[in-house]
Image 1 (tube, rainbow, N blue to C red):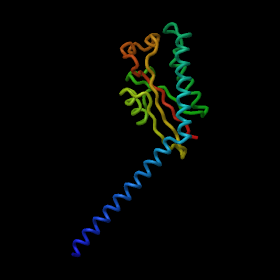
Image 2: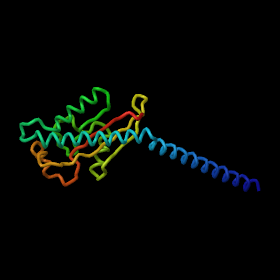
Image 3: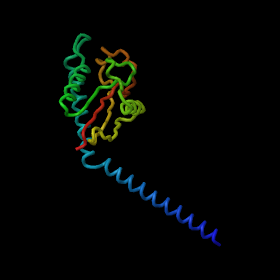
Image 4: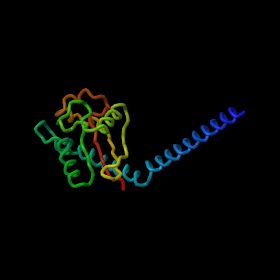
Amino acid sequence: MKRILFGLGLSILATVTILAYSLRSDAQAQSSDAAANSPAVQRARKTVKMLDDIYKTAVVLITDKYVHNEDDFPAGSAAVALFDAISKKGWHKVRLIDATGEPYEAKNVAQDEFEKEGIRQLKSGKDYYEQQVTIDGKPMLRAITPIPVVMQKCVMCHEHYADAKEGEPIGAISYTLTIE
């Protein structure tokens, strides 16, 4: 009888422990989901989308209006210079990253695991990849968006882009913004 009661007690204790852990995990997941969709995170995502539209539109306009032959200053180089200036001024960090394995500049390769995973996600067909991280005690949103070949002029400086399939990312823009 004592063994049965002891076994029953262990069974009840195990059930209560599993239930408590499950409830705690659900609460943590809900808390994590709430943080992931907080108004501050939504604002940061919206800012990334706005910046992405601005930067990509600028590159296309520069290429269309000012790049006529290989001797002209490439729009990609203009974007890199702009991104460096924006990052140095502290507005946010933004980088141009190669996704072909043949970067125009060696510094344009994915530099950390986030950027490497972002390129893998974009190459697999996703159109956006993000992570929320803490850097120097501040909550940050890291995001990556694809850059496909959108103009034949791109092939002037990047011959290997000629083989890119429609919509395939040949590059990406990596963003790091403070979540405020």
